[in-house]
Length: 119
Image 1 (cartoon, one colour):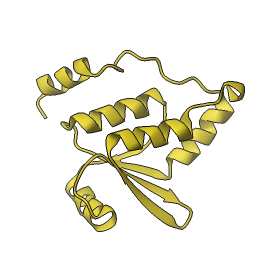
Image 2 (cartoon, one colour):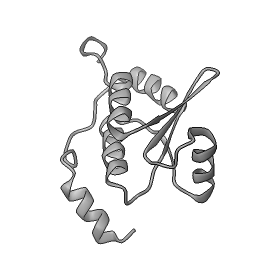
Image 3 (spheres, one colour):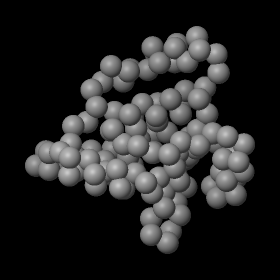
């Protein structure tokens, strides 16, 4: 993607200056472990993907990002849709493919926003 377009998308996104979530070291370790079960399929130039990546950054979680040609094949095989963003969730033996940036962000906020008493 053109760097000017990425800068424009970054500028226009409202969460660009938001501080990251703060967690204790123990809670960050738990969040990091949980994030290993997630993969985000995305495109750099997609504004909905940018919105989702910004939420991931704000939540301070390290989710694997996929956007290469083999990722597209995985997305079609597993998620059965060619739209991004798509969050692949490995939940035990179940594999969940969550589409739509708003749904993905709500899921991530519910799972990774620390409770006030847990901080």
